[in-house]
Length: 549
Image 1 (cartoon, rainbow, N blue to C red):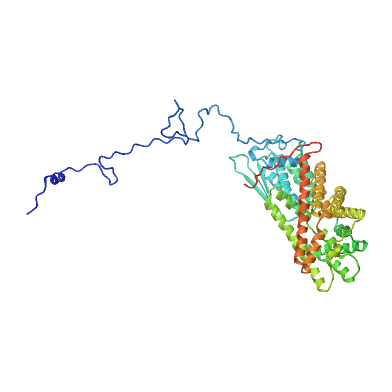
Image 2 (image 1 turned 180 degrees about the horizontal axis):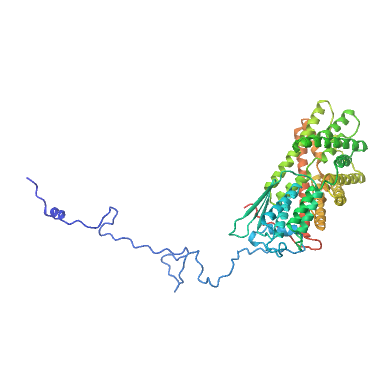
């Protein structure tokens, strides 16, 4: 018998189903929902409970324009908080300074060319102008110019022919330049690789003369004329034949040996060793050997001549013979250019130049060390301590330093008009160095830095008066300051298993080389800072850089 169903349960089963869908997350009956949230306002909105001021203005987002802003009356341009940099480019300033100033500004802040680029309605072809700038930049970089000077020259060429929105880039082996007419146009980029490097300051001076004519206010040099003159510069032969260069290398080594206390016999022996080393290096170059092996071969004959004097017991100074032969081999200009690129912000190029200097330095060390090691095995008594005696012969040493600078200028293929000033500049540098390091018994590093600073200052001033590069007036003049003695003594100590003493001498040689490089660069910067052009005293805009953050 079925159980009877209660009245309440039966009524519940007979209720009609609701048409609305229900969910297990729905609020139960009798529970009121939370009130809707207030609309979010600005980050600066007043918190709850705080009575606002009467009739407050409606506040919006933090990025919305203020209530006083009007699009109709808005300014035409936006001025940043630090202001818009103003480029002051006087016409009487050298083109190098004007180009450096504009290169350190963003493209949009550079002033437009004040004169038409060239005669005619259409102007020169853009690819042709870019190619011309790359070819001239290649000659400058291969000749030893700093990266900043090469960029300034390339930018000056582009700007002279009306391409003001261009960006040149220089590394150790690659040159590139990009031109973009406007923000909506596609950029055009061209590049060129520097594969061969040579030292010919006569050619470098001719390139600077071409640059000065292109940047003249009259703009009379067309691209075709510039290409013709550039081809003539490339075809020009060196001003000195090979036998003159070999004789100059011998005279340089002999003068350096006299500078270190040698006599007439030491002069001729050192000159003979340098001549043999130069001929051996030419033979290696003719066989296609890299420069590393050329430096290694050139360093061996002077070391062999010094060892020969020791074995003959002639009572001479073999250290002066060996050191004199090293003066023509130390890559002073490459080191100065490396430090200059590093100080001006071209760190990739500076690192590559320093690596090149390190390879050449290692080649010299290996060449001398090989000869010294063999000589020690044969019983040669090479005493570095006995060779450190300072010799004071002011007149003789001053004349020797000037002969060294003159022969160095010949080896650099300088024009005859620049040899005299380079010789005088080097003589002054040696007098200053000897006065501090020998007479006053001061620090050799400090004396080297001061003398190199004067070389850079006088060389830069002379270059600005002649409107040319400062290299012909600086590179040969630093010859008497090169660390040949410290290099030889370090190598000799290593060959005698005195590693600590050897590395100490080599560290001193590196310190002297850096003192030369920094001194030359500082002297040049002082000349640019206080004298932008002959008769005009003004400051030069510095590079806008951070302190590493």
